[in-house]
Amino acid sequence: MKENLKKYLVIGIIAAVFLLLGSRLYVLQIVDQQQYGKDAERNSVRKIVVMAPRGLMYDRNGKVLVDNVPSYTLTIIPKKFDKANLSAIASLIDEDTSYITGILDKETGTNRFNPAIIKRNIDFRLISYIEENRDRLSGVDYQVEALRTYPAGVRGSHMFGYVNEISDEQLEKQPDTYYKQGDLVGVTGLEKFYELNLRGEKGLKLVTADVNGRILGNYNDGKDDVNPKNGEDLMLSVDADLQAYAEKLLGNRRGAIIAVDPRNGEILCLVSKPDFDLTIFTGDKKNKDFSFVFNDQSHPLFNRVTQTKYPPGSTWKMMMSLAGLGSGKITTSSTIACGGSFTFGNRTFGDHGAYGNIGISRALEVSSNVFFYKLSLLIGLENYTKFAKIFGFGNKTGIDLPNETTGLLPSEEYFNKVYGEGKWGQGLLVSLGIGQGELGVSPVQMVAYTSAIAMNGLYTTPHLVREIKNISTGKDEMLTFQTRKIDMPQSFFDVVKKGMYLVVNGGGTAKNIKNDEFTIAGKTGTAQNTNANNHSWFVGFAPFNDPQIAVCVMGENQGWGNEFAAPIAASIIVRYLSKNSQDVYENIKSTESVRD
Image (tube, rainbow, N blue to C red; front, side):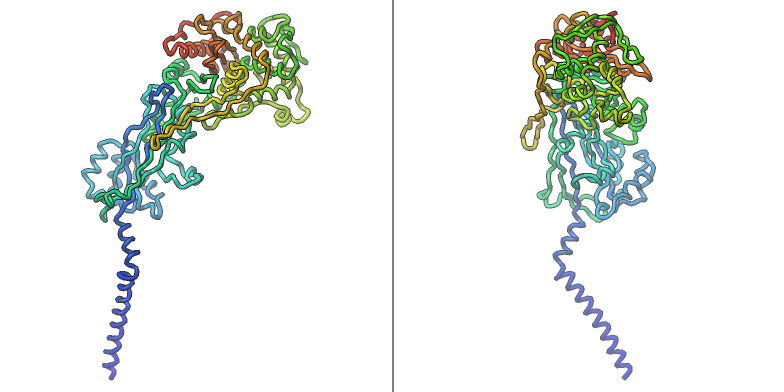
């Protein structure tokens, strides 16, 4: 009896096990067959993201400034990678094994089944190694990407900007989920400002792979692939030949040059020095030059065209003239006595000479300091700030580059904050009248202000991009930037422009740059610097009766405005108006004229 019970118990257990297994097989093969079939298929199909080539950049004449060339990038699928190959791969790319594991360890979840970017711009030696050892290099592969190149012979470091791998912080802050770890993104310059236009849209390629991750072929004959869409091209207003010439003129000296067409704000050249070689950002991010740029004490990444806040010196005197006229404190025929010095309180301020009773045009021609000391006190701080804002100071110009400064435009609120309410006096206005003191401007602000004077009050936003071309759709987008008219009588601009004409073509501070073919008008400036040599400034435009170019040159610690900045500005003007056929810089000699 007991033996029969045991026999039936064993039979019952066996039957229960078979029933359980049968039920599970039924669920797997019949009930959930469709779902598990999809899962199995998913395991054998690999999704490969295809990066879109970034848009190109062209100069105003159609010359390619920023291009793409094919480059190979090493990738590893973390889930498929055999760490027995770690040392060999690390040796081939000249890195520690921790460099590779550090990248792979960041990939979690489903990302471990996707290729992780290990190193860009790898050489043919590594590609050959991968091809020859595919059977044992599970998960190791390479892909083709587009690498930035600059074929026009111009550096354009601060203008073009560079791309780099997106940081963890940027990934967290992105408004969408477009970017993934290892993607390239614009970091500075036009690359950053027009990132959404330049980046294009990623594509997706589906391939079948075996259990070792080896690609067997296209999935579904490529019918389900999504082609990438190329980034949009930027058509710049820059003249490549003029840009190269301006870079040559500034050389290795610290400073900035910007030239624009005053009629529409189009930037013709933009140079900031020291600069850097953009190609160091296109490959190995551990390149020694890469680190050097970030640690260089001369700050080559700093854009001196848009980010400096230096006092403008005597180039500010047109601003003071227009503030005096606009506030009604003086008229176009008013004169102010200039006796060679001016005493305010217990301090005496000197001048270049004693000019007697002079009006605005003559004061600009000889760059009389006393005239503008007195004028500044006459108009007062409120009008000083009001009219400077009208000409764009204290605000960003809106140039299509990132990280532009507003500069520093002192006001009553500012002085109260710095010195305390009621603890500062009108003496601060004396230095402000000649572009010194607590006033900071950028070259891009100065060229916009100069353009507005040249165009009788038409203020146009300086900009680098004229048009955006979408090669995928064939559509072109002409860009528009802010233009506004400064409401002042024509006579105000006439008297100021006459003074700027005399600076170059009369007995003024820049008569050394007079040109018989192209009539230049402008103003020199020498901004005092207590820590080193003075800063050299010049702003100007030409031709006088038909302005086609306006220029601002600023040389850090380069001394007198007429000795450094003015000759460079004149050379750029002549070079542009002569259609890049003339080089006059070496022929311009410094004179013994009044220097400021």
